[in-house]
Length: 225
Ligand SMILES: Cc1cc2nc3c(=O)[nH]c(=O)nc-3n(C[C@H](O)[C@H](O)[C@H](O)COP(=O)(O)O)c2cc1C
Image (cartoon, rainbow, N blue to C red; front, side, top):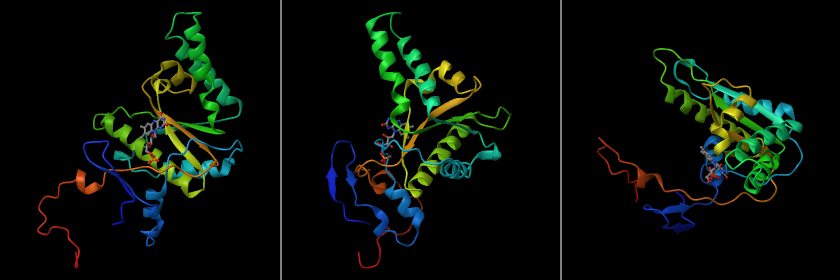
């Protein structure tokens, strides 16, 4: 285990900020990537090329999924397509306020610009298979696993990525805009680009504080501890 760099007590269980893991897990790059990946929202305007994005999507499709339903769907937006999505999101947010009001105008402007925060935005959705033995929540969790693969692949490619959600994910007009059927779930928007600045530091509750070990006849102490 690494040495905690700082201990925070903002939750019921202490969270610990730990130094990047590459040095701790030199034996396997997957472990290092899992620890070192960060959600990064601040990106430069240059668009990563299509072949790179295609590799991320390929990685996403290797996520585990029950009964091989492969429920994930991707809509990859760049350039003007981000503006078009922004208009739909803007209209959906404006519709929460009285028509023609100042609040509606502000909500539109705020929401419409969101997809422009990165040069590439991937909407990730799940189209659950409707069949007797397929459990809907498992389709959604498989989709989440696909997004994590995508985020790790982006990290491996030197890209900044962040999974964003919010009201637009749950708006029927946004779903229709993306060409998804009514039964689909939009799990989020992955914003991608080249990082602008250093990655943020994040904290986690150490796993032992969240884990019960049952049926183990040792206390987990390593020799010499
Ligand atoms: C389902 C889901 C939705 C998220 N939505 C947002 C979001 O809307 N905006 C945002 O800034 N980050 C969002 N995030 C990213 C989290 O803020 C981020 O993962 C968390 O702060 C931990 O940071 P890390 O990913 O760098 O470890 C979301 C993450 C998940 C899993």
